Amino acid sequence: MSYETILFDVQNGVATVTLNRPTKLNAFNDQMIAEVTAVFKQSSRDKEIRCVVLTGNGRAFSSGQDLGAFTERGDTVSIGEHLRHGYHKLIKQMMTLEKPIIGAINGIAAGAAVGIALATDVRIAADSASFMLAFSKIGLIPDSGVNWLLPRLIGQARAYEMAITADQIPADKALAWGMVNRVVPAGQLGEIAAAWAGSLAAGPTLAFGLTKRAMNQAWETDLAGALAYEAHLQEIAGRSHDNQEGVAAFLEKRTAQFKGE
Image 1 (tube, rainbow, N blue to C red):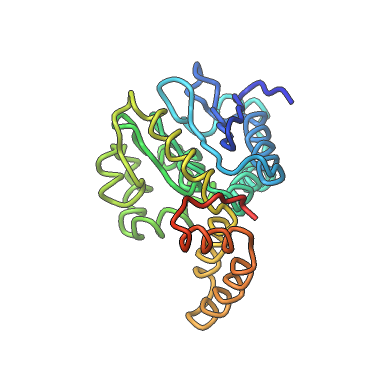
Image 2: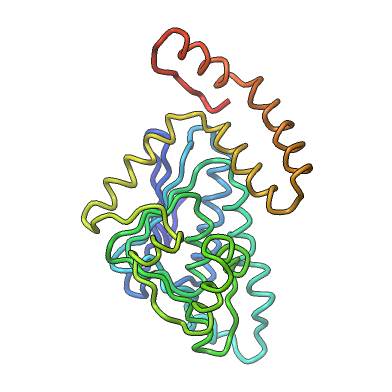
């Protein structure tokens, strides 16, 4: 399938999704939202895809919603419906994808793009990257999952500060606050993200996915519920090929050959 607003490439078990509207700072229009959602859906179904990398082309990761494209709809447009039928589907697709998603944050992530960046599982930022909740500049609240994701990563006080000040948070501060996992030289971002993705794609991706499921569920329950769900998922993992292969490889002192099943 061909795409107009993104680049999509699959090699050695790694799918790379590149936001590709560089002249618009990779701002999201309806087509881009739909195309990114579609490739994450495809990635969930394709057994050959074992890890996904999400990044941007040019100097931005994404500037968020394309306001020009949005206002072209006229005065009767519903922001709520736009969110429910667009960004919400994308965020849910990412959060429920039981394969690792690496966010290679190559430049500024602003507005809705912050939510999309935070919906990745591991975030590697270029030292030139930054994050900004620009919503208050146009009299809106954060959306696209930001209100759920950001306070869980950096705490409510810092998240609220970001929301009401719309300050640009540079990569080093984002690292100190816990928004990203690593900050690397901009020129090495692609290489480092690819190395991480290759390593994860060769790993026990079934266990990675079940771990993501367990941690997401743990936010919604108490300790007893989390322990019970953990035991249920461990039963699934314990019956997998990857568990048997991992134990055998450990005992035989060799490298495990995982299949993600």
